[in-house]
Length: 483
Ligand code: ADP
Image (cartoon, rainbow, N blue to C red; front, side):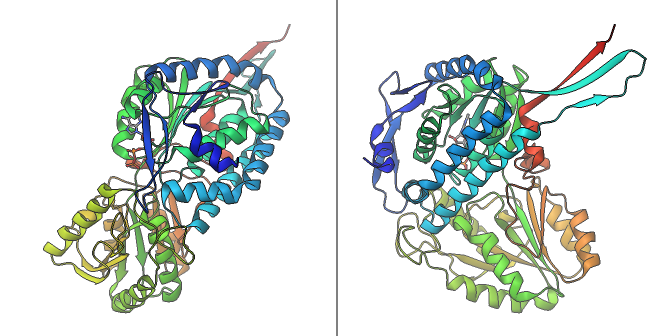
């Protein structure tokens, strides 16, 4: 049986060394968002199974943290290699459960595997410090200790990479994890876990519990053995988890929603801006937290941009992600489709103008037409709310200050983009944008080498880069008096 077949037919999740069913025997159906077909089921676990997974993780902790960094790195690298050996199967699995086009799914596997490699390499560089003492005869040591059992809660838009970004540093520093994947896309997580065991990750170091989000999340946040929660998802759920984590004062990492602005100035290279705009808006059919939510285009190039951009968008091919040439898969579910539709309805009632797309796709189901909407204004709801779908509203501006002020007029602060050929403006504007990531003449920014994370209500902490380790360790200061 292939990995794909095994994962789809097992109907079990991983607690310690065992693939288990839910105590209740209940299951959750997982569908293919392109066809509505049920592709398999996973256990609907809750509090009790989560508590057992946490116990298994805690029991495995001492052995894993006692290994040297290079021993842990070797295991992570073996896992990374196995993932890449199964890249095609994992991509297919992801397209089946998530809907994104196969080449994008394949790209995500490589991107996620890149994080595992990066953190395997970083494992050997988790350095401490020896600090000059304030009084003679003392030695001040600062070391970094693994934080302990980590609870990981991930979304459906990147079913593999969001796990890799969290589990990579956790494994590298010696922490065990309990992962709760999104119920729409649990199979990618389960496949990764299977390969992790095959790579030699010890039993209990990785646990995957599928099921009732509130019950599992409730246990992960309340159980005192869990010392850190790392979450990627919506700001509203992030706030709930933050509150819940307060009870046991856990360390937290939060990668939450975004409302990315994309600024195009008169002096921009317009063709590059159009290419960047398409890449940043329509990847994963607009369902990423760094996807552009609002385009701000300066007067002098507004009409030309709208025309060129709309032409490029009209060429995107919508369809089942398994079909060749498709660049736009379905949205994740009917609720996501209704949300995009309602944002368009709101904009049209306030003077917006659809230039391309604008409605449900003739393929039906969860498919929506890639849409460009001109004459956007700040009264329309996408000015404040995240769209998470293939809708590009284009606002007009005259002055740089006005564009920056509008770009910053949001509670979010994840990614922002600007296109200009003026070096002064590039520095000036990127400095004043209140965002964690800024792309200057670039529409795709994320890589394992760079810190990813937001400010304001977009989150806490950074993933990737050498800083990505920090969220999984505690600084420990030891003061030694030498006799
Ligand atoms: P999205 O809108 O992208 O689905 P969510 O924030 O709803 O984002 O979901 C992200 C992850 O959080 C998923 O794994 C989901 O099951 C989980 N989740 C949702 N609600 C809760 C909750 N109350 N407690 C813990 N996890 C939750």
